[in-house]
Image (tube, rainbow, N blue to C red; front, side):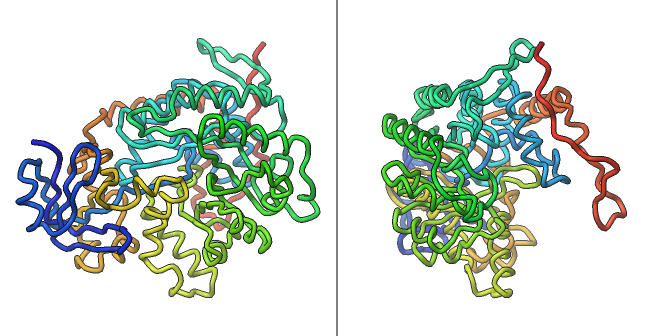
Length: 492
């Protein structure tokens, strides 16, 4: 037999005509979709292929998560109850207490979570604030995704200020402190690009990812106009070197941006980290002027709900390409893009006077499929089910009480389907999960390994103080004493 033939399912193509094909069939040869249409028409033409019966199931494009964080799968819930401290807890943890084995373990756990939820392409920033001083971190993470069989966009780049940046590496169980210069971060990123970009038959890509597009201002929140004024020497250095490096290796750029940064970046138009080869995450609180800049430059945007004061409707009305993302699995998130998309829709309904006419189900589903493919520059290959495109497919089992009756399939996908309803996943024409069973890696062994590495990290970093009680009987969480972030280890 050569290839696969999926038959008798309802196909949600998300193609140019947005066809929904009842009792449909889809033929795969090697890694591509070669035919799609009615089952009665395709079955005689593809009698040489292995048949997968999809009765009672939806056949949809593999979902795309264009922004997430590597490491988050093994630290979720840590410091979840102290939101104001969260970045000050996780950033030192990632920069001073992580081992190389941790990244392989996180890759297995996060990859399996994405796979089981029908996510076939996921972006993974190496730590919360990117860390590129040890290329093995990214290489180990990608190794796990390669073994599982998923597509991964590995995101590495320079950290935020200060430069040089203090880091700790663990060699033979002992910490070793060093300061890493900006140029060393660029060199580490280049090593990752050279080692990984285009590997695993093209399933692994690398995007160059500075922490934010303007490092001199607030890195995780909006900056007011009196704070975000003029670019500094460091801002210009980062923009120029990131642009040069991306051009040298022909890779795309991904970063975070918040209010004030887009206007500042645009001061250096030659090197600004804006444009169609870039997608920016968050964009909280940006002004109308900054939305105009995004539209003028053709910059892509990604949004993780609820997203605070992110004007996603205003951006989309200006024609700015925008997709929904998970933002990783910590402190209290997950990689289930169905639930994440649902949160995005309901958040906009609430923010706009409970207007339930905004963002109908079809648009929401586009934002985790074809729109997401566009923002990462891959809409010619993935994001929809069309002849000639990659065979990246999720099959959803609709024979469940919460998914009945079996009609209005896109409404059902957006309103009720959960990641756990995904039955079968195909990437590059290869079946990675069938009838809920992962075929490529030992799931139990991977989860056991992840648990061991997570517990070891908690012990190394002293994170027990950030694992709080659930607050039984309280209307508001209170604390008996101040909660402090972890300190770098003593390397003497």
